[in-house]
Amino acid sequence: MTTNIGYEQPRLPAGSSPRDRRAQALLGGNHSVLKELGIGTNDPASAVHIVKETAGAGFLTERIQASVNSGSFAGRKSRGTLDARAVVVANDSLLTVSGFAYVGDNNTYQETCRIDYDVDGSVSDAAKGAPGRIIFRTSSGSGLLKRMRITSAGKVGIGLDDPSTKLTVEGTITLKEQAAADADVAAYGQLWVKTATPNELYFTTDAGNDIQITSGTAMAGGSGDITSVVAGAGMTGGATSGAATLNVIGGDGITANADEIEATVDGSTIELSASDGSGTIRVKDNGVTLAKMAGLTRGSIIYGDASGDPAALAVGSANTVLQSDGTDSSWGTVATAMIADNAVSLAKMAGLARGKIIYGDASGDPAALAVGDADQVLTTDGTDISWEDASGGGVSLSGSTNNTVATVTGSNALIGEANLTFDGNSLAVVTGSASAIPCTITGASGQSVDLFVVEANGGGDYFSVNNAGTVVMGLAGSKSITTKEQSGTNTAGHDIFIKAGKSTGNGEGGDVRIYTSPVGSSGSSVNAWAEALKVRHDKIVDFKIAAHEDGAGSLAEAEGASLGKLFLEIKVGGTQYYVPLYV
Image 1 (tube, rainbow, N blue to C red):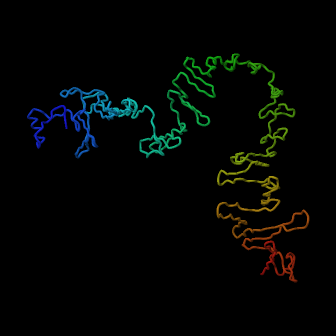
Image 2 (spheres, rainbow, N blue to C red):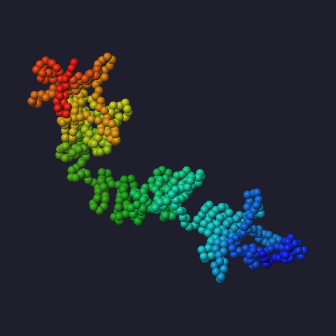
Image 3 (cartoon, rainbow, N blue to C red):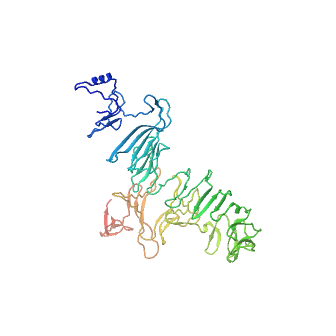
């Protein structure tokens, strides 16, 4: 260890203690005060210079104490002299931590980075009375440059000296994309980039709501209020798909602290200007100005004058009409207003009265059709129109698949005395409450025809309910009553129930009877019904006997014969069998 400024302790013979050396120095009037200290070097370049050619060339402080305090490295600064210290001023540097790199024999060590601890403002003689800042500098190979500072107000500036907020950055900020936001923390929001191609910018609230800001190629779609537009290009761009609309409803409308407002629509610009003091509203490049509108009076209109500019055309005289000569417009008088060479004159209109309508008569001329009677409807026979009773034509509702062709609401809202024809794909009758009957069909007094008929498109009844309440199946071909087919796997089919009428008290219940119509004689006469099977109210099945055995042992028709042994005639697989019956 060597010092080159101050006093070196005298060298004593080997075995002498440090205390002996200090005592001899004091006797000689010298103090062991070091002004430069070299550790590993005889030529210190600073107050303390440590040199070591192996690992461990560092500065280590160790504090052993039962407290939260640690070893420290501090810089202290004052102005003045050792005997008369003076107060520091703003921008004085208190501590500098630097890094040097050896660049070669010519320039030896060059500073590459530095952290400065400076005074950041005025100083007062009070506890904690000096504001401070930290400045970070780095070098790109052409000298040190300021990169970041932390001010005495706790504001961080990157790329600039005077940050205005907690973090102010001059230049571009890069965010590494990630799959999702981090865990939510109350009172904190997150700004992050979501992994996508291209990636997307998000803001996540402390409640975990992910708000997309960009879609990767443009601003993300959304809704809300536009509260202001700052200076610059204003609202530009447009919708990414289809048209975009700005609606202003209520309030003060659209206001601006500007001399001019322009709106461009389909290449034409509408300009609101106050810069010339006229308060002009005009289509740009060809003004429709307040000055040009000033000639307007009651009844006058704006038209294009001989120069093609907007002008006010004064109101015409009574009973004149606006007409054109192919170049200009003007008010003129005409005897009759013509429609395709056939006059609609006041004389022909004179027949009008309350409820009458104008129509084309047999000659094709306009004429007044008298009002019809109460509840009549206007109908046509294909040539003329006339008022007719509603029963004459009925009501026709025509539509297509999935379209509502008519909606009828209220009690007795649609009453037809004749036909109701629905020309569509389906007819649905839905009640407004569970206790209402969806559809009631009531026959007229003395009804002689069917009440309800379902027909095929080409004609022929499929299903009808006659005036006696009997349900009749179709007129042609074999008809069946089936339940709806099921779907799915291993789904059971629906049952068919045939139920006779219920009785009350000790009255007998209704029987279930099945009739057929046996073959009759040749001709067009309708054959009679014959009962084939009856299920009685007491659950006894009553079959009609088909055959009996006569005295000769032969089978004969049972009807009208002297009955012997009886048989029930059945067919199995198309073969006729006779099952003997025993009493």
